[in-house]
Amino acid sequence: MKNGSDALVLLLAGGIGSRLNLLVGHRAKPAVPFGGLYRIIDFSLSNVMNSGLSKVGVLTQYKPLSLMGHIGGGEAWDFTGRTRGVKILPPRTGEKDSDWYQGTADAIRQNIDFIQNNPSEQVVILSGDHIYRMDFDAMLSYHQYKQADITIGMMVVPKSEIHQFGAGIVDGQNRIIDWEEKPKEPKTNLASMGIYVFDTGYLLRTLANNKQEFDFGMHIVPRAIQQDRVFAYPFYGYWRDVGTIQAYWEANMDLIRENSGISPEEWEIQPNPEYGGRPMDRAPSRFVNGCSVTSSIISAGCVIEGTVENSVLSPGVHVKKGAVVSNSVVFDDSVIEEGAKVDLAICDKRIWVGPNAVIGNGNNMDIANKLFPKHLYTGISLVGKEARIPAGARVGRNCRINFGFAESTFNGSLELSDGDSV
Image 1 (spheres, rainbow, N blue to C red):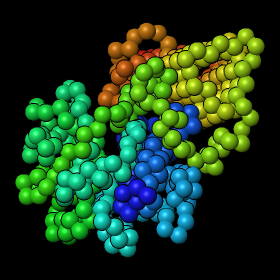
Image 2: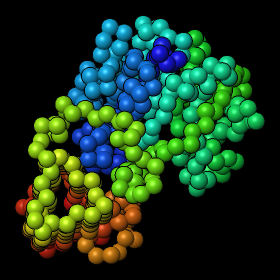
Image 3: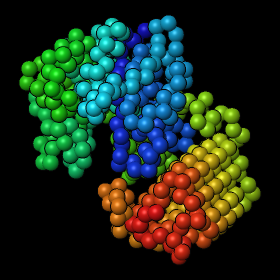
């Protein structure tokens, strides 16, 4: 049995994830589909399962229903049995907005009773919205060897990206001696992955004695470094925070890039085949004579009559004759009609692109979306769930088409210029 099998896991899955824009319009960020078959949270849940850990609390908050349905009773990740289990922990909301979680530490504090009711020597705290593989059992062994109060998973990132993370400075023994939370001018390139191991007694005392400290990275870790034993656990594999449209698209593209380092099947990442599109119940994908597919992931139930290049298609997508899908991510049961073209787009479930319509028209990638310039600025256009793009329409770059959008409300010219939204 692995060393960490006694540890309790708390998985933070309540963030709004607003930078993912329309993709989180109807679902929590960890429930966003990924890579055709998966949802983002499948990576964290599978890492827990593959590390031999068996007791998990999932802290939800924002639009939790699809996430709760996806997790179900935890059967897909073998979290069932007398000593095993996954429990959904909704926020203890009262009458005031302030009763919602005010940060990572506050979320854990509001669930102290769950920790107390599931005795363990260590608590592992994870985020539910990262793409990676990690052995938490090895991290727990390292934590015990170092006799640490807190151990933080950390990895080297480019200094240009460090402003997005907590950053730690370590000594020769990997003890963290200084900390900067999202530094504008960083002194280090060692970034926190948002993965923590706490000794349980230490965590309970810390949360009880410091009730105005709401966030681990902002409050608890900087103070603990001065007073207690806090160590960095070095991580060298593939890890990506998919909290932006660009990062989400890049991670999907990594699945079809050679030597990118991501391999969900090798990592034994387990989806839930019983939820959502039920890919296990679908017919095999069908490739019609004359179609062309290169460097793409095509999921079960897809029908390909046209051309698919460098794209990730979820179950049930139909690309009709003469249609071209390139450099795109297309969710379940979408239909790309004859002669249509979809380039550099993320399309949510059940969208319909009419005959000869174009999403990703022209080559000007530089005009950011006027409503969301920090979300759509690299040329990617975003199409919301169940939107319908009329025949012959021309949708430019960095465009945003709202969920449920109907053909009848498209402007008269059937043209959506670069950076525009409807």
